[in-house]
View 1 (spheres, rainbow, N blue to C red):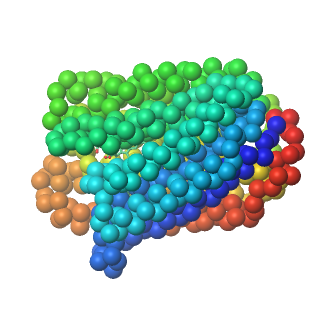
View 2 (view 1 turned 180 degrees about the vertical axis):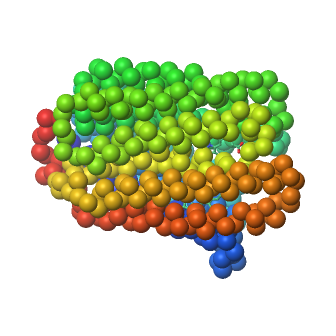
Length: 447
Ligand code: HEM
Ligand code: HEM
Ligand SMILES: [Fe+2]
């Protein structure tokens, strides 16, 4: 069953693609700066480019998650969204807050806290925006005909993500306390509540694409939620090793964060098993590629590459180096970017009525983005390990080391070009699908 109000999702996805494109532009600005081609330095110095790159990432992913919720919740709750008009108001205000923040960064209006650079005045607008979003989603869910586990996990993830934004808004004079609470946002988002959002979207897609019984799929979802909280909450300690808090965190952080890959492993096993079990041959293969891909690549990027530097003995040397950037790229890509690509690939044909899936371009986009991103991860990794040895072990000067590793950024840029090519292919398909139509959403499918 489809609902006309689901088409709101399309515009959130469109905003998402637009901001992703911009994010990549700033990635290239940084990549070129790293090999000495820093012509834009006067207008966009490296630190500005970095803040824009990472904040755009967060906003395009959130826009993708919101689009996913506007698509999934009506279908799961079996009713139209409570207000389409307000959803568009929310979309426009989200875009405005994003643009204001980015413009601000270029004018040097920002806070020097990685990932939370948005100035605190704008934070209140973010809160208002997210409250409106949550009100629309929660009202739709509770006035709906059914409350499925999938919908509840997705909504819980979104609700907790909003609540966890608040500790990042508290002002502290102490650098230590500030850092302590910054991780409640950054860590508990990506290694906690965002995993619930991912799990919810993943479950929805697997139900639709494999045809396996909802009961079976939702049982797995409980396992994933359990493992996530068991490991992820105290796993926050892997950011507290050497920031000036109690040494107990070396033990707590080490043990619990080492368990975190289990939640990602469970997600990968879950997706692959459901795919094997599924008898339904859903025609939308490319959505299935992205869905299984997200589950598998997130295990590699977040689980394995996260584990690679999570023990205190290792983190002592790798902290804040390009090893972190290596892990960050593949983790964000696998877990959150790919799941957004999956829900877009699944929902677009349903909203537009154009069954464009399975074309060569879609498959090309899948493979080139993934191979490009794996290459980028390796380039960051090699540069990172070299940096750790030269800077942390042999005590060479920071800038001298950055110069030594710059050759790896040539490789990075080559791989990034392949990646960007794939993104362009994906966006061409997105545009070719055209706008959503009411007729497409009136077709009643038996899925
Ligand atoms: C053409 C593509 C891209 C290029 C050339 C690129 C390049 C870079 C560079 C040079 C940095 C700064 C590393 C440093 O501190 O020296 C960076 C940071 C970062 N990028 Fe990208 N990037 C690209 C795409 C992406 C994508 C698609 C994602 C997410 C899926 C992403 C996520 C991040 C994150 C999370 C950071 C911060 C890492 C940290 O905190 O250490 N980037 N990127
Ligand atoms: C999808 C899930 C994940 C994403 C998107 C992600 C992303 C990131 C990012 C962006 C950073 C840099 C943060 C900053 O410096 O502000 C980071 C740091 C870190 N991550 Fe992850 N991560 C994920 C999962 C994991 C997991 C499961 C582990 C452990 C098994 C892990 C271990 C670490 C460690 C130890 C650091 C600190 C690096 C340092 O000291 O510089 N991550 N992660
Ligand atoms: Fe973490």
